[in-house]
Image (cartoon, rainbow, N blue to C red; front, side):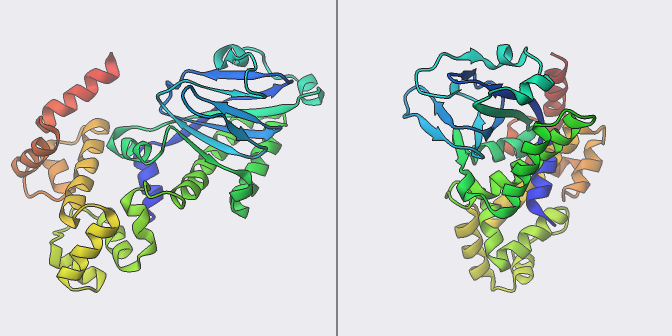
Length: 303
């Protein structure tokens, strides 16, 4: 079980390129910070990321910026440059003439949609702005950026589909690179470097409905019960039992919001003997019954 792929899939983490902008200095782009997760890649040139209350952050060619929702910010050629809203900058369509023009910078901007508590967990692992410098990218990530740049400079059929998929690839590489440098990485990611705990996590994610007692998890890890419990809590950040409950609840949320399965069916699929036991656990976690929670999700989608 590839846990990162599973988490991104369940968060419906899919990107869409919404602009490839050829800019002539001085230039500036303004973002309101409304989107859950936005990526910016300087395919050419240099600049700065500017946010109120923080020092400007220099950006170089190939740097990848991941920005979460919240504080507005600007990406500019130089500090103090006039800015235009990204929506206004996008209104000018790209033409073959633009590709041969005197652009000092090419900025690609893309947005990711993440949903559910899995998406929230991924977003919470990131700061307001995370930057993966081009010089720090591993060769595979650098190759993916090269493909992005080549496709962004082309005008051909299927371009949007290719850019969208390459943006998804960039997210995986960028998350890996960022999480390697921070203590805020999700606990399950930190555990991937600890084979006994990783083994258990992969099995939990593959089938959380199994009768996972603490002794059963310890056996899967090849450790004593006490050693396993201590290592799991230290590395992942929560006790194994709580992690399992949270995992089951995330799977239940997914089923409640995206399927028409009965509560009894969902209960069995996430490891509860009946819908009453499931409802009790769900209410303890969310403060409302599964049925009411499902109805609230439907109402949100129709507003």
